Length: 210
Image (cartoon, rainbow, N blue to C red; front, top):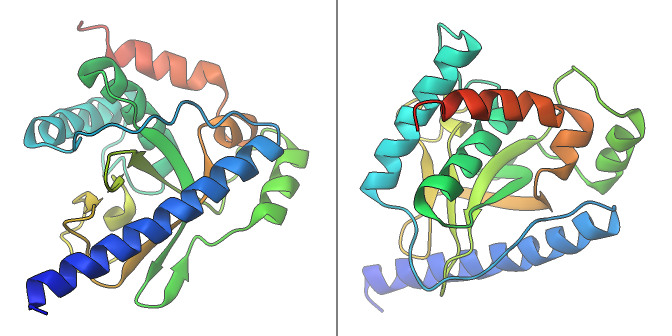
């Protein structure tokens, strides 16, 4: 088997494993009484240069709205991801999905949590302290899902330039990086970290220019 074919086979296997965990995350989200949102597979790869340029512009605007002088993506993964997902749906008429979970980098788990932690935080209700979770975007593309992480490299080193989004698909994956979905949708975030008014205020400001 050629090196290229071996890499493609490895990538496909990894994405199939991700999709199984994603399906388990959908079930867990529903069992906890939260809505995962629509997950509709589409036979079109979502990530493009046009989308990447749009995302960078949106992130800059979010930073201005929130009054950040540094990198707004640092320790702000939930707010950034949720807002960008809404913007992508509006601009590109696609259905990306907010995904919460943890990341394994070179066999080390980062932001790892389980459903017991989720239940504990839900019992607390809204809290201003940081949640020990990570958040990224899943595009339910066919034949393989695509992942876009806008904030990981702002806080962790994975061999990519700081601030550069992490992209994963059946065709490209960073070496030694694996994503593990635990929950799907914004329900957990809205019930524990940010209320609807927080997102709506920023989203309205983002689209005042429309």
